Length: 53
Image (cartoon, rainbow, N blue to C red; front, side, top):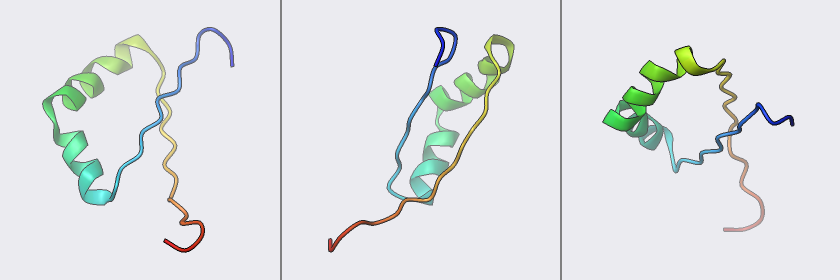
């Protein structure tokens, strides 16, 4: 990666946690501001459980 790229890595327990985060005031402020600051590409991955838990 070059000096002009940042990766924001977030992990959520479930879909409800993602929705709660996205509805929060700080996330709404980020989503409103980020388009004028940078290109944003979201990559959403599904968690895979490994081993017996």
